[in-house]
Structure formats: structure tokens, C-alpha cells
Length: 491
Image (cartoon, rainbow, N blue to C red; front, top):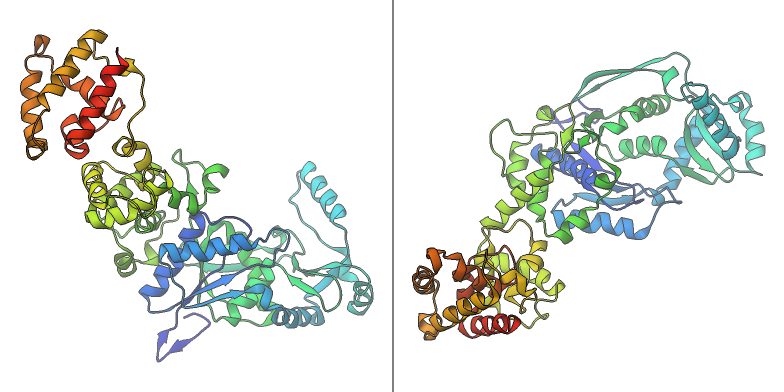
């Protein structure tokens, strides 16, 4: 049972997502938020959003906005919050004073330059970096006189040769010795006796207790922070939440995700045309699976099936090809009306249609043709531009095998004559029937002699949907105009 106890015999579940607004929201952030969200919803608990904004050097308001907007876009709505650490400084000050008064914390007056030199020397001497601060010997009252005149760090007094252990819900029992934790670690910065700025390993303990967090679910890079937080909690007499540390996200080569891959913001995936439901589905499987062959699960289904006991210990591979496939599955499940609604902003962005001035039925017709092949909405501009603007291409692209320009002109003239149909007859099935019949008459019955130049004239691309489908969408007038343009290119 968690420290929070129980309500009528049932454990009260409260999870939190606590990002620092010091960079753009990335995939690792999403997974942490998602797993906390799923666990709280599966258990009927509470999901809390906390903004850890006390890193004043790296904090930017736009990063905080990015967190809020991305969570809303993904549909990961919180039950309480957002709470901001910068608005809770008085709370931290009370607990920090308690640690100082009890002798569990002390003021450190070493300069940043001194600490950097100490660290560098330890690295050179192949020692485990640690700061065992001499200022812990100074009486608190003497330090308080000095801190009124200069800035300092407040450090936790690290116990000597103490075994610290906790049971991780994913990894089992984990043990640490205090001698391997880097010495006396920082709790806060101060510019005076009453001017504290809390640091991570201190503030998080106070916040989790104050917000009655029952389970802390976060990345395994925080495992080394956990014993420090346990020490702070014990010194203050605070019960601790349960911990679950998620596996690393690995690149396709199973190495640690590169800085470039890891730093890609969720907004870039959004701009590329990934759907939030596909992205969540993909990320849920980074280190977890339902124990079945199912691969496509809605957020509602993920909540129903999520089980923290099925989170794996080993690294989770980030496979972009799998994400593309999954996103394509979601796009194909959409009705054409839903797809058009999603696609229109991308068509506007790529200047293929004017904002609020377009033919919706024509767009639907284009999308129906491309929907089976579409992987992400951001591809629309590249793949479908020829449906909205006359294509630009070099005349050499019209060449099929050993054909000369005069042969291509002849072929295009044949197509042009064959397309002199009434509008009612200008349908895909009828066009295919007529053009294939004409193609059979080509030299050596090589259908490509008619169909390749025709398709390139219509699309300007090496690879595209077939000429019959394109003709059907473009219509008679536009199709004949493009064939005429191609003939003129070869003149």
C-alpha cells in the first residue's frame, strides 16, 4: 500500500507528470505523460500536471506553452493543475529551514569555479566525482551570518556508508550505497537567508508529498536520483511514493537514441502530419505491450488494457517506419469527410488551396485516390500537388524506353484524340477501357509507349497514381490542357 493509505480499503492512486519547461516537448516526455495518464485512468485515480519551472537560467515561457498545448493536442487531459513550482516557494522554504535546523542540510560557499576544478581533477584522476563539502563542519549560526552577505548553495549532508534500497515496480529491488551518490548534493540556491530557489532533488520530494502522489512513473535516467530523494524524505519524516522507472528509448540500431532523434519535438511530428491517436498508440508500445498480437489501440482501449506489470525492463526501439505504418492505418480508417477536414490545413500550408476558398468535393475526390497510400498528412503537398497546380518537369521525363520525341508526340496525339468524349463518358472505367484498347496498337504491343508519356504529362512525376485514376479526378478540360502542354514541350 502506498503512503497515502487507502479509502475504504482501496488504494488511492494519484500520478503526476512534472516536466521542466527548459526545452521543446519531445517523445520521451510524451511516454512519461502517457504512462502516468494510463495508469491513473485504469485505476480510477487522479492525473496531475506539475510544471517544474525553477531552472530560471533555461526556463522559457514558450516551452511552458508548448507543454500545455501538446498535452491538449494529444488528449492527455489532467485532473488537477497545472501547478507551478515558482508559485510554491514559501512551502519549500519551510521544509528547507527544517533540514538546516536539524543539521541534515548546511550552507556551502564554494564558488562555481572551485566546484568545476574539483570535478575536472576527479575525472582526470579517474575518481568517482563527488563533493564532500568542508562547510558542513561550520556551525549553522556562523553560516547564516555569512549567507546574509553572499550567495550559497544549501547541501544535504550525505550519510557515510549507508545502504539505501527501494523496490521499483518494474525492476524489483534496487540498492545503493551512499558513498556512490556524489557526496553532499545540492538542495537549493540562496541569495540570502530568506531567498531560496529549490533544486530538483529537494523540490520534487516536497511536491510529491504535498500533492499526495502515490506512484512516481518516470524514465530510468532518474533511478540515480531516487536514493537522494529517499534520503531527503527520511530526513523530513515524509512517507515516500512507489517508484516505477521506464526503460530507455533506443534508436533503430538499438543504441541510445541520438541527441538529434531525442530532441525532435512533438510539434515536428504534428507538423509532419502524424495524428495524435497514432502517435499515442505508437508511443504506448515503447516499453509496453498488452500481451496480445494487437497493434492498433485507441486511447480508450489503451486505458482498459494498460498494466504496469507488463512494462519491460529492456530498452524500447523507436522505429519510424512502424510509426509511419501505424499512422497510415489510422488515416485509412477515416471517413473521407474526416480525412478532408484533417488534410485541408496542410493543403493551405503548402499553398495548394486558398484559405476558405476551395472545392471541397474535388479535394475529397483527390484524397479518395491517395488515401490507401498516404502515410502522413504532411506528404500531401509533395504527393498531390499536381492535382492542384499544373506540373513542372523536363521534357526528357516523358521518354519511355527508346522512344524519340516525335514518337512521344504521336503517342500524346493518340491519347488526345481518344479523350474527345462527352463529360458523362469521362469516367475511370470508360477511360481505362478506351486507352488500353489504343495502347494495344502500340509497337510490340508495349502499353508503356502510350501510358507512360500520358501519365507524366498529367502528373509531371516518375511515380504517381495511374493515368486512368488521374484523368478521372482532373476531368476532361484540365487533362487535355496538360497533354497539349506536354506536346508543346517537345516541339
